[in-house]
Image (cartoon, rainbow, N blue to C red; front, side, top):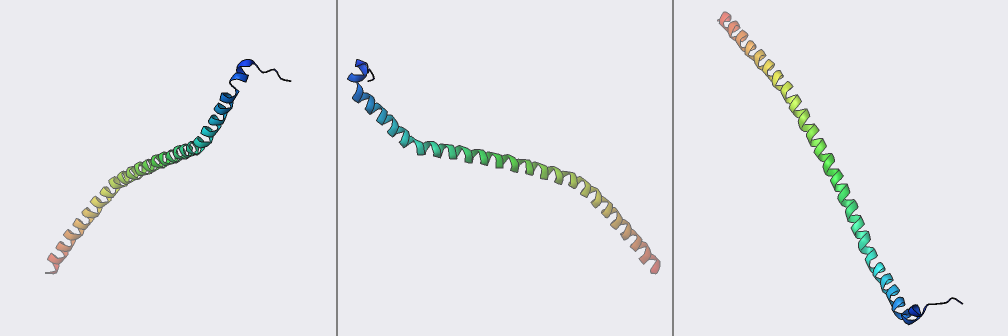
Length: 97
C-alpha cells in the first residue's frame, strides 16, 4: 500500500475541498475566458477593417487629387477653346452684317 505522510492524512479533507473548489472556479471561469477571447478576436478584426478603410480612403483621395490636377488642365483647355469659338462667332456675325 502507498505510504501517505501524516500531514496529508491530517489535512486530507482540506486538500479534497481545495481541489473541488479549484475545479468549480475553473468551470465557472471557463465561459468568461471564452467570451474574453472572442472579444479580443472581434477587436482585432475591427482594427484590421479600420486599417483597410483608412488605406482605401487615402488611395481614393490621392487618386482624386491627381485626377483633379488633370481635370483642371482639361477645363482650362475647354475654356480657351470656347473663348476662341466665341471670338470666331463674333467675327462671323460681324462679317455677315
